[in-house]
Image (cartoon, rainbow, N blue to C red; front, side, top):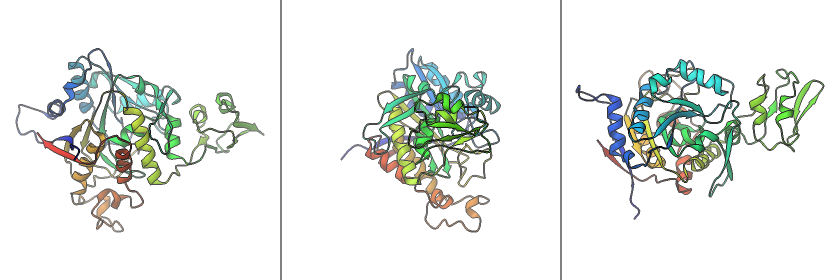
Length: 372
């Protein structure tokens, strides 16, 4: 029988003046083997979500500082990273993204390291990464700065998600590290389309396309789906956000694509994963607002295995009763299934992502929980 993956856990208790929460996180990570990674003189990407402006559930910058300081203590050169969003919002290009991060407190002075937006200014600076064993994705579009790093660390706010069911390490890595074109590939079963009312016929989409798919007719752009390869570059350059894609992929397929994109990111280099089960909002931090937590804060988890990590965090949340005052206590929400994530979003099945990730060899859902 294969050995179970080790997941290390610490609660949020700090009853003594001898240790605060960032110090406790550092101790957890070192106990979990973080110090065994050779980081000396190496670039270390710390992948996290800076929070859409207006959202207050995202991880505080103090957590990023704890991880960055630990990397530097091991001789590494850390940077915080995320990739631009596919939807219109505060993080759709690198300038807006960095500004949003600064507004939410992620400055070099508060975190101890700089921010690099993984897929560049317009979301099209990507590396094409083969996915070994990929069923839906043969070549993932990953932000280039993410792939340029020597060591990869995920720092995840564990929460619910309206499309994937659960937003854990795999979601943070797979969807989060995809370029705008990569995000489109995961979310969309089809091709981008033009909203004519917003289009001004500037031709930027036609100039950027290598396949002659966008055409300007009567002052409006249209996209030939037969020529379009779904790279998403037209979305990145449109000055009016007139080019969009449908978020129409079935939840199960979306979760499998997330697992395959995660494999592209982590294969072939040292990786380590941390998840904080705190402020467990029902929806993603990409929302410009956050609802009340659906479950009580649990603690911090760390592991070399992102699959085991997600399973352990999910088990800790699912074991709880819904918090009074949350959406799950409203009429129309059925928690009898025993799964708070599925109760919040009945059409989703978060387990699919973990099952597919295990099949791809990303890790194991069987784990040993070690409490410090």
